Length: 345
Ligand code: SF4
Picture 1 (spheres, protein in one colour):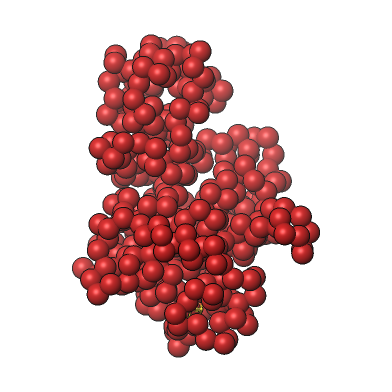
Picture 2: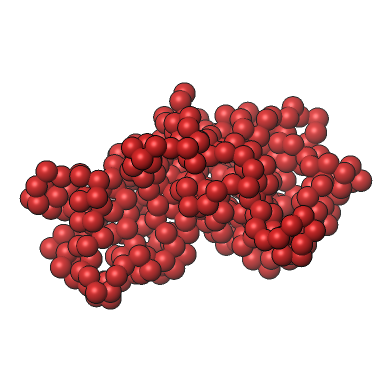
């Protein structure tokens, strides 16, 4: 299994020196391998301040780590040649939260589709380019004749976002990083856009990293989940396991920690905001200040990822009887599509 992208022990610090009040550790010693095959959908879930958006920017090469490396096909992003960077830009596409920001109001929407075709030489002629665009639009359920030639304000938010998904598809990428792609979309259209992403995964073999604060949509679209808390992984694994039987106290808090957790419930924002603001120091468990099960050792050292069953990891000393797994092997517990996609079934 070769790696398309590898995030190796990255830490990202914003702000001043070690003792500065403005210093923020957005991501701490985070590792993740995204394999070339099979194509998967992995949700990275967390509230504001959890580090998920910083991670998205790292994966896209928009942010450099303070420590650690992001590797594309085994090479550090910071050392890619021009040709390798070009290849990276095709292979790893993004769908941002706010589709309107991507459009220039002075251009017809055709512009966002013809530009990558010209930039990356995707077609030999105008006709071939037009055919590619029409195919991409149809793949996300849009009619070219009702879409092309219009200006951004003449389309709905959902249509604009679907054009962004079509734009990503034009490049035939191997990975799409979707950063809160439906958070500004009407609820009625969210399922359509999530369905489009799922379709790209299944029909075109494109992996998706789905960054979200919304556990409900994460559950709808993903096979695996990484729950982030204050820049670190709290729990990760097959989404059925993590959502239906959360093992980390933070995940339990998020899901409500009631006798029958219901994945259809929306994110518990009140509890989450409180817990995030009470994030602990860099030594010890980040969740220490809020944890109802905290022990003295939790304040002394950071818990590693304990593998509590074949498809799940929890960074919590409550599970220290389980073997620990190196952080860079986190993806080895993830499930693929198909037979073993629902370990609870
Ligand atoms: Fe709570 Fe300790 Fe587990 Fe952290 S390591 S979540 S403080 S029990």
